[in-house]
Length: 292
Image 1 (cartoon, rainbow, N blue to C red):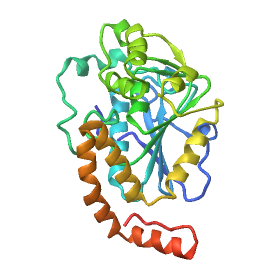
Image 2 (image 1 turned 180 degrees about the vertical axis):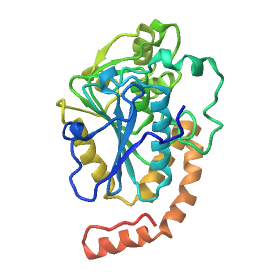
Image 3 (image 1 turned 45 degrees about the horizontal axis):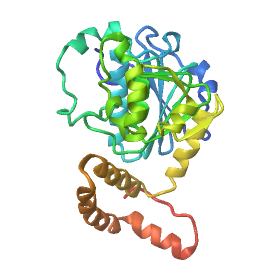
Image 4 (image 1 turned 90 degrees about the horizontal axis):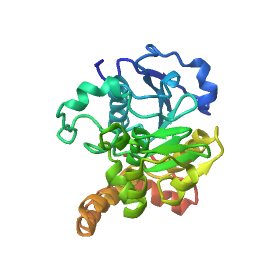
């Protein structure tokens, strides 16, 4: 596989607004359309990561996953990046793994949870500390569901088709679906869709809690960007601490999450952003946070 990020198309813009995926389409040059790529756009404190293999319904190759790992790791480690958006070029989010290209990796015993250097986009290993908003559309199968549920907020176009169809291929989901379907949708809803491998729409995904908003097709990225900017109005260290404490509750339980509240609040209270938050309140103005 190619080294992390070797095929990434990084384009930093200094002016707003970020172009919508449709407007970007004519400007995106894939270095290898057969292997696909992950594009990166950075606008202020927001990183947009685009799944880019539209001719193959954005079917994921190992090379694309390596690039997505590199992008998530960059988002996690760069203090100037506060929120990530995961979206797709073309008509579909992703049809899932391009299975023939994954055969050798799937037969191996690679463990993601031991790697503390790289961020795992499925969050089964090291997760990203920054909030991630997923903007999904069209076919969103298998890995597509797992990627969106590994993030924090999902905006779905009204034409989405979801399916976790691994049992029809003789395998089971190993990117987090068996965990997060249950967390988000409850046992009955999870088993209903995981065991039948059915195809369901945006309305059903919203009903069981897999997505947070349904928007008209073509506006899902714009809405995700609106929310990302809204999140960026908060102090980034406080936003990250909020995500971390909520995740501690999910993974470790009530007592563990409560135990972490005091020490974290003490650290936040000593930050420059906390002082700015108090000053902005007194002066009745919007705060200007720096992440320090």
